[in-house]
Amino acid sequence: MPKLIKAKKDSSAKRIIAFFLPYTILIAAAFMPMWIYSAYNFSFAVFQKIIINLMGTKDIEALKKLLGAVLAISIGAIAFLISGEFLKSHIQNLIVRDIKLSMFEKLNSLSMSKLNQLGSSDIFCRISYFSESIVKIILKDFYSIIYNVLVYSVAFFYLACSNVFIALAAASTGPVIFLAGHFFKKKQDKIIGQQNQLDRQVRALCHEVLTGMKEIRVFGVQKIFLDSYTDEIKLRQSLTFKLHMLFTFQSQISNIIKGGLNVVVLYFISIMAIGGKITIGEVVAFNYLFGIMHGPVLGISNSINTMRENVRNSKTVFDFMDIETLPDNKNDNKRPEKKSDMAISLSNVSLTIGSNEYKIFDKLDLNIREGEKVALVGLSGGGKSTLLKLLCGLYIPDKGEAELFGNSIKNTETARKLVAYIPQNPYVFPQTIAMNIGVGKEGTGMDEIRAAAALSGAHGFIADRENGYDTVLKENAANLSVGQKQRIAIARAFLKNSPIILADEPTAFLDKDSEEVFYKSINMQKGKTIVVAAHKLYTIKGFDRILVLEKGKIIEEGNHDELMVQNGAYKKMFLMQSNAGEEEKAKNEEKLFTA
Image (cartoon, rainbow, N blue to C red; front, side, top):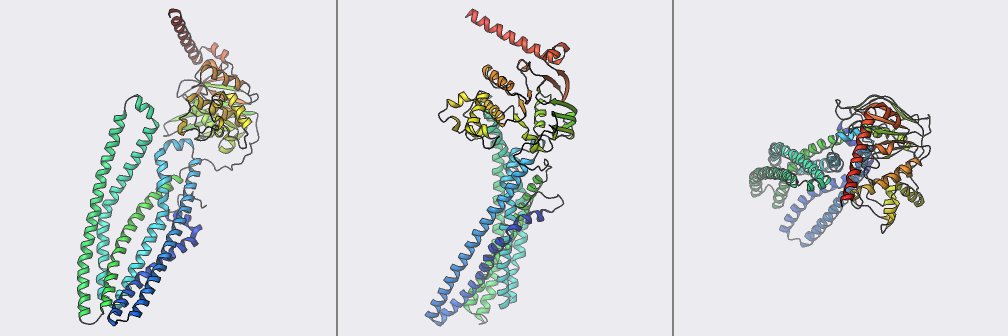
């Protein structure tokens, strides 16, 4: 498969051609019927002339033989044309596959900070739609231009051999129609560009509605989105009407030009026929060739304009491919060696997400020993989740060094083999529950999957389902509760059996019993390094170390007892949660007493 990732200095033309080079022989074979069909157009005019002239001789046998030859040649030409179209379709599928695979590989190599800057609908549009524009440039637009030039040239050559004046008169329609088409095409391109922009906005709006459907319905804001959608549809209808009228004007003006010149040429041909300079058969052939000369002119004009549009679309693909990526790491199944006793080491780490003004970490230092259990606490926006994502290799530091057992996280594939990650809002695949748990470890057996599910507290609700671990989950896990989805994600992390477990609010959606099961399971992970971001401070009292983060900085550090003595931010947060818990407990007791 050709590589799409090229240096930015390479022109779009070179990068487009690079995709077609591996299929040069197939493309040449696909273009061959075009030459044959062009010759067929010429021969058909000759056949018409001969047939008309034979009618005057009343030679029925010769006429039958000629008609048989015309039929055979026509069938052969059609067969060649169909074979060419089949080859073109096959080549298109191969090249589209190459492009989309390259783009998908690129998508998987982008850092989270880059992905956050791109909209999902924009990425989807580039991969699904604009990627096919590259193929259309050669197999549709360029093919159409070559074919139409051939047809036009053959027709002009035949007319010129008989009468140069008629040939030039017929050819004069070309520049006029071309210029008229170019005039209208500029306006059409502008409207098409506006339509494409509207289409992207509509796709983004639909994605937004589907993603936030629950909130939209609960808060009763359907009308806001419906009004927005209606406005965009009305605007598109207006643009479609304008575009249709432009095409209509262009078509009618072209027809007037063709009709007028056709009458003029037909007049001179008739004069020549009356004077005996040409036969009736030649009149028919001239008229046929003059007629087919108009189609190629419009075809060339339209193909040039659509090629420009497809080149513009292809540039959006190449812009996507030129985005800076994570380092290209070799992906093998071997877990990297531990080069250091320090499980996690951050030295002078700075990280910026989005615009340069939004700096998450600035010269952050942190060391966590192997086997240590560390909790990250603090107010929302302090950097807890971002720190965990950085340790997974989802973010790469702008400056400084971040290492896992002495392995740089810049080598993302290496880093990810050393960690298991439980995100705050886990994603489950629309596959079986067994696949969702075992996805992080190849060759996993059902016994291991069940054991991991038992550790996470997921085995009970899985076993209660009719198909158990073979239950296929719906899109967005619609047939699971949020808590069940989180327990599957926890089981997935336990099964991976990595030396470092990173958990972002792992019990946020779990009930008290499931929460206890999780932390008991965490305590059973002997020798593993555990880093948990937590809001429920009572769950991490027994951790070896607690780090309090505020605006990307560690403002307090120590175990629970040490931090309570400091009378700092941690103690305030803990006492607030404790007081809130006591008040809730008192209210519940009062309800029971007065019931």
